[in-house]
Image (spheres, rainbow, N blue to C red):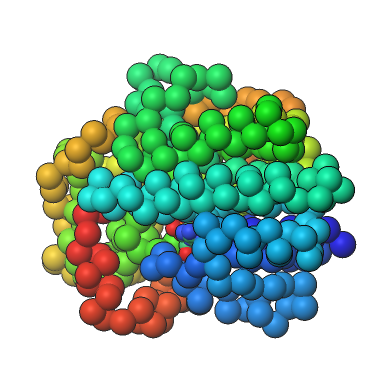
Length: 343
Ligand SMILES: NC(=O)c1ccc[n+]([C@@H]2O[C@H](COP(=O)([O-])OP(=O)(O)OC[C@H]3O[C@@H](n4cnc5c(N)ncnc54)[C@H](O)[C@@H]3O)[C@@H](O)[C@H]2O)c1
């Protein structure tokens, strides 16, 4: 049985990835500091699985990470632990540098200092983002060799980490891989992010705040498809390479909201009169367009996106309808404070 570490496994993508790994009979060690975006609800079912272990731990705690690697000798680390909200990085970038750059450095150091036998076997998969490429002009797609040109402190911290990961591959021979996924949506996402926030507001009769005129284009992938891609990259990716993970489905933010509203109508969700699109002051440095060229992962690894956006959004809405209690578990005070943030 393959043992792997997933960092950030109590968050949105991490918890979906652990679900997949357990289904595929991996032994999974989740290392997560349980920050505000982690939710015990995301991992509540795992604790009954004998192939699951959880350490409430910051990836900056190098010695403890080193000991876990020494004891469990994992075949790999999927690094998803990160500060992930762009707006928060604009308010204050410090924790982003600490986790997304220094934390990654600590993980790499813990691997570098491990016994040769462990180090030679262990693969380190850094989960990056399409945001590292910055704004992509219309009629253009970012391939893996596209220049890094991050616009926000969040994407700059992820870009910095990617370069560090590459350098540890080159200099110390650590077996590294990098994934650059586009925007994910689906179950388990904390409701400060765009899609769950819109669904949450639709279900609770609130307005739908939209930056600028809603013209920014994003590429969207259903989280389960992204997790399958991550696992395939881990198993079949060429060491030292990075792989874009995109669906090819690119939508203006306003069109995504309209899609959600149409699906809500189809599902007979009663809309409150207050549920209207409200244009709000734009995010500084807001990238206009992301667009990935994902031919490498299809060609070299044989991964294909399965879920079309309408089906994926429908599944997501249904999940949030069924799991509204999930939100109620977060204290009212906290949730309004958190959702009080911009999108
Ligand atoms: N969500 C997306 O659309 C998207 C798209 C592309 C890439 N990514 C990347 O995927 C990864 C996961 O994103 P997500 O959306 O699941 O984020 P998330 O915010 O839902 O989860 C992040 C998890 O990391 C944990 N964490 C934060 N700092 C930590 C630290 N110092 N030590 C240990 N754990 C820590 C948090 O507690 C949380 O459980 C991130 O690296 C992100 O940059 C996300």
